[in-house]
Image (tube, rainbow, N blue to C red; front, top):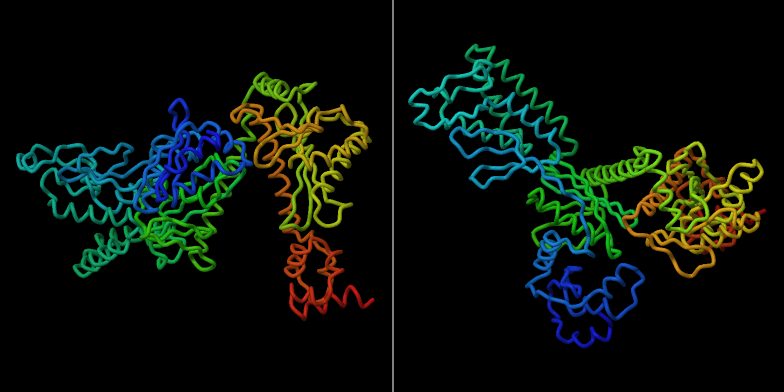
Length: 601
């Protein structure tokens, strides 16, 4: 749909809140969105030029638009999430989660059994969960079996069958794991009391169970029944051990949901911690595929709605890393700065980072499980897609890294035959560039790398990838030209967000199919150079390797020096500041020390 075509129908779009649906000419649902004002939101797609390639393609493919007006933003939010989940439109956020989760079911029957299931049958049974880990469910069932005597048999224990004496107690009765309801040795009321304690254990609410055992133990001790008292003491100890393993925060935290997000290009990862009575009862991390440059708050809102529905959460407080517009009026959004809730958020962020690193590691190993022929096939495909003169058996990739605008370093990773060749990886400390200048840094490291290979008469790569797009590519090519290596290898630039490839001197970019094996290999190479560079940077920082002239000034610490470099980019610029300008940044006392250090001599 063009802007002119849209203007012909724009007056028909309502101003109210609601959801809008974009359809292709063939009737395919392309996109579902929500809006406070439908006309204002939909118009934004047609009245401006979009930098994002996928957004441009979406607008081009829109044939007709449908609307649904709702009463509130919350209704729009819920309806949008429901439609995305149901239809999974091509251009909407795609949350990768096709698992079925285990539940613990309390079966709707006489003397109900308690067991693990993945199938929800609407027969009046009570389902507790879902849980993310089958291992955790089995651990809970073992705790329940040890502490609460319940039947595990499949007998039809109706009152009539029990009265007729159809059944006999089994070994579980003699082991003390069942009280023998099959022979009428346990009343339904007593059995229901056991089920109540089961629910308390599953919810992490152990106090009622422990209090009950404590009273019974004292009663047995008073009656000189020390063996029975000892059994109860051991059960209490097992519950205390289970609670100690589970509780990591103050129980005053109560019931909360904790979410964190980590974005990585077109992918985002969201971690969810479910907390009940200060105890983490479950954790889950999902992958979200962005389609139209969605912001982190938009992705996180969608993931929160999805996960809370999937895990049937009814908590009234959500802990997140940044302020978020979440339309459920009954839910409080908390962005903690300190305390136990901040510790929970930090733990969630640690989990999401670990998940991303594990995913990255598996991607790197993706080709390692393939045969030589399969790896060659990927390389031949890459050669054809990039029209390379030679098979890219040797690929190198460069990336710059700096910490909050300070301390520039760089990294080079090497892939041979489609696999990482870690012994050939190289780190670079930037030597000739003052301050932060990514272009000049790229020029320096490319020159140093290939000047060294030429001097040592080492083989050159067939393909060089410069992470950073056109500007970085131009700087790298200055070094390639200075070394007379034009034509000796193919050099391409990789745009960070769009995953576009640029060739020297070409104004048009190359876009490979999103699911192509060629682009998957390029992504793996790029992700590896990011990981390698960031790891190097962290190691240097943790060892205190980064030290600048500002830290040599008596009375000026690392935090102040870092603050100045973040603001002014280089020590040389700090030298040129007046005392008044310094005072605005670090205060009068420190400003005098810094100005005197550079000017008194």
